[in-house]
Image 1 (tube, rainbow, N blue to C red):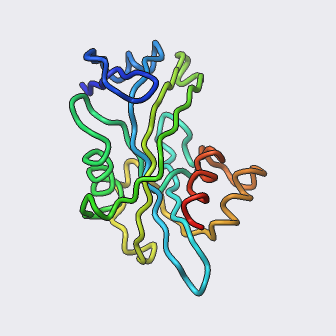
Image 2: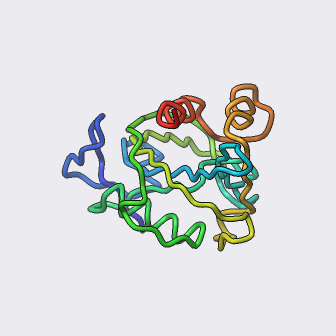
Length: 181
């Protein structure tokens, strides 16, 4: 079983933990880490999107953050971000390669497999610069179907105007944009 720290609105652990399924059943606030990978290619700023595999219980086949994951109880944002990059994309990175962008939170209510799914997250957002081709990532195939580089402005427009299936918050892309100028 996977346990999360229950956190306050700022992402600080309260001293209580909860099992993952129960956290999503009752809407307990917990932490995640989001890493967005960027590169410059032929003068264009590109962002890497992962396409969630069709077997995922939430948002199958949708484009998502380059790498993201829940933070297990007792762990921190950076170590979890690094672990997820290794597991999902086969990347080994050092803590100093992650550029902290900010904290955000959201609450989302959904229905997965006939059960309520209450996702109440506080998440740290990071940027990582990696000039790799799509085929150079070692994908965790039970999680990720593929990865795709997209021009950042095309991604922003596509998310805002729902031009492709995604589970990306435009507010998070806007936060990233503030740190790109």
